[in-house]
Image 1 (cartoon, one colour):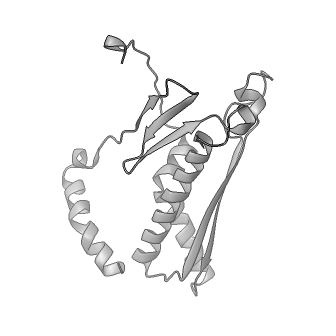
Image 2 (cartoon, rainbow, N blue to C red):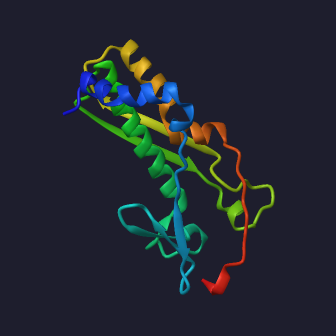
Image 3 (cartoon, rainbow, N blue to C red):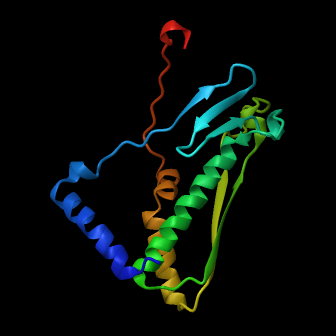
Length: 174
């Protein structure tokens, strides 16, 4: 099991390198998928397996494919959970157990073009941590503040990064 000292030892050379060379800390993460030629679906490469994302049942999907909205919340839960555990470890806060949940509110009228004024996308997202620990409330407050600060997915959603989109014609039909 990784404790605070082991985590600091693991991260120390990385932090030192990034302080000396800021560009070394800059990487580009990538995700890709293939549009399904038979169904309204997209095969997404997760790094471990290929997952098929499709329409949510509220928009005409079967429910057999993953909903991209669910996947967004799952990414938030995963990132927040890992960040919480790393921060707790660094602070020496023992977590006997923990559960991370995310809920998001959608109005599918916007996605389906039923109501022009209805938003497309999540109107609200709620992230919750339930932890079994003997930590003080002050420690929990610090843990939450730092988890929020260092969670990549949370900060990306909260700050709304610059986005760009492009479409190009594939060569040779594939």
